[in-house]
Image 1 (spheres, one colour):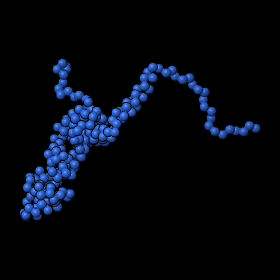
Image 2 (cartoon, rainbow, N blue to C red; image 1 turned 120 degrees about the horizontal axis):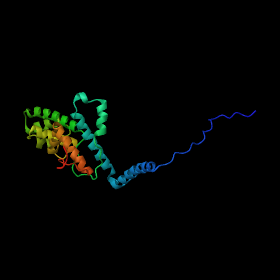
Image 3 (cartoon, rainbow, N blue to C red; image 1 turned 135 degrees about the vertical axis):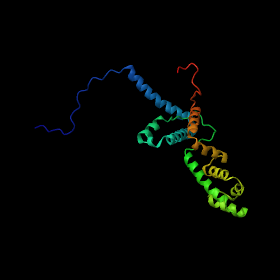
Image 4 (cartoon, helix red, strand yellow; image 1 turned 180 degrees about the vertical axis):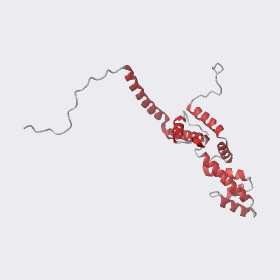
Length: 216
C-alpha cells in the first residue's frame, strides 16, 4: 500500500498571466520616482537634513495647534481632529531661514507669561531696600541671576515678565517674547502669517489678491 503523503495540497495549475499594459508600467515608474525623489532630497539636504526635517515638523505642529485652538469647543471631536491633521500642510523648506522659528509651545509661553506677570505685580508692591527687593525678585523668578534681577528691578512688571520668559524659553530678547505672547491673543493673524512663512520657505507663491481676469 502506497504511503500517504502529509503536507499541503499541490498548487493549482498556473493561470495565464494578465497582459501588462503601458498604464501598469507608468504606475510602477511613478512609485519608484517617489522613492528616488525622497533619496535625492535627503542627499541635497546633506549634513543639515535633521534641521530641514525639524523645521518641517515644527511648522506643522505649530500651525496645527493654533488651528485647533481656533475651533469652537463643540467641533473638537476625534473625527475633526483627524480631518485637521490631513488638511494642515506639511512642507519641507527649500532652505533654512536665519529667522528664529516660531516655538511650538506658544500657548505654554503665553500662560507662563501671565502667571509670571501676576507674581511680579505683587512683588512691585513690596517695600524695602534695593538689595532686599532684588533678592525677593530672584526668589519669585527661579533661575535668574543677581545681575539680571538688579537691572530689571526698576522696569515695568510686563517688561520684567517678558525678559524672564525670553530667558526661560531661549528667545532672543524680551521684545521677541512679547511678539510670541501676542500671537496667542491674535490667532487668526498668526495663522495667516504662519501659512505665508511656510509657503515662502517651501518656495510656494501665495497670491496676495486674485488675478484681475479671474472670474467671480
